[in-house]
Length: 239
Image 1 (tube, rainbow, N blue to C red):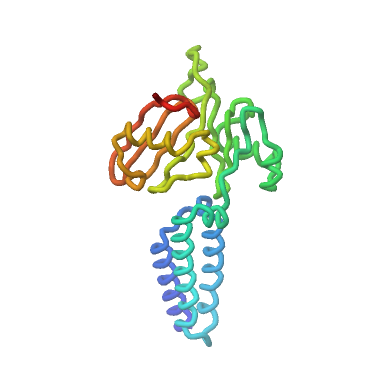
Image 2: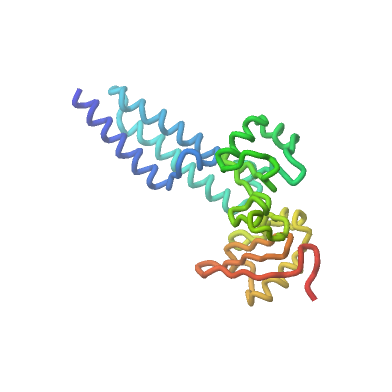
C-alpha cells in the first residue's frame, strides 16, 4: 500500500511539473492538439500509479516524450502558418452582416442551436444584434456587435455611427500574413507605406499589425508600446 501511495505522489508531482512547463491554459482555451495531448497524458499517468509491476521510470518516459512533442508542434506552428492551420484549423466567420453563414456552420458540423447558445454566452440574444461572429480554433465564439448594440450604447445616445469592421491581421510576429492580403484587398507596397509612416524600417520589427476596412491601423513593435494611426480605407493607396 505504501508503495502505491509513493508512486502516486511521484507521478502527480511529475505531471504537475510538466503542465507548468507546458504553460497550460484553461481547458476551454486549448487548441485541439493541446487537448489531445492533455487527455493522453492524463490516461498515461494512471497506469504507473496502479500497476506496481511497472517501473516508475517507464511511466515517466512516455510523459516526457509527449511534452517534447508538444514543444515541437508548438515551434512549427509558430514558424509555419500552413502547419498551424493544419494542426489547429482557422477561425471561421459564422455570422456576417447577411446573417448566419449556413455553409460555414455545416463545415464546422454545428447547428443553429449551437450558434444561439454561444451567442447567449457572449451576452447577445438576437442575431440582428451581431455584425460578425467568429468561431475560434479553440471552440469559443468571438462577437463583434453592430454599432447600435455595442457597449458604448451609441444607439441609446442616438448617435450616427459607422458600420463595425473586423481588424485584419496583416503582420504577425515579424511575418506578413500573405493570405490576409487578398482578404484585405491590399498589397505589400501599401504595407510598406504604413511602415514608412510609422518610421519602421523592417517587417521583422513588428509584433502585430492589423488594419480594418475603415483604415484604422494598430501597430506594435516587439517589446514596445503599441501605436494607432489612420490611413485611407483598404484598397486605396495613400498619396
